[in-house]
Length: 190
Image (cartoon, rainbow, N blue to C red):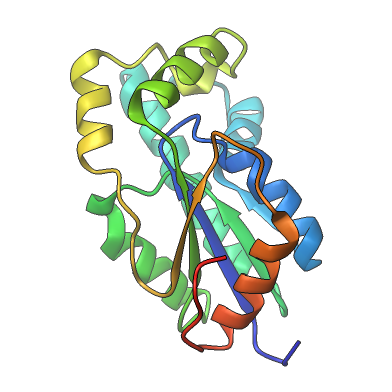
């Protein structure tokens, strides 16, 4: 592997299998994993999952999410070999992600898009919601889910590999793709 930093964004709908894949991929690449949900939940454990200052729960969740995103970029800036970052980045936040990567000193990231049918992701999200941290709020309404699906597409700010996460993933092949793609070569999808 070259001296280049390898920055991998693992993206997709909520409950698309991002956390599971990102964890395995980080191990295979020998890179740290930076998960927005882990950071957000930790912030909420310290600061409180309920709004302390009269804000609505949605506003407080948004503030904790913004703080978690900024923490991700700050940690990435201090990861000399790069990192695997995991979150649901919608197409409408592409500019914010680009700004975060720039602040972290990353010129280009590779992206893994966890491809899963929307109805499968919704069923998984509803099933896991009961056991999730309180900071994630209530179930998404049908309108909120529709907006999420509408904006669900790869950021496309670098090489993208779409991975079907309804079946097992060849993590070793995906790690190899990430190493090659991070070297700024045109590479076929594994």
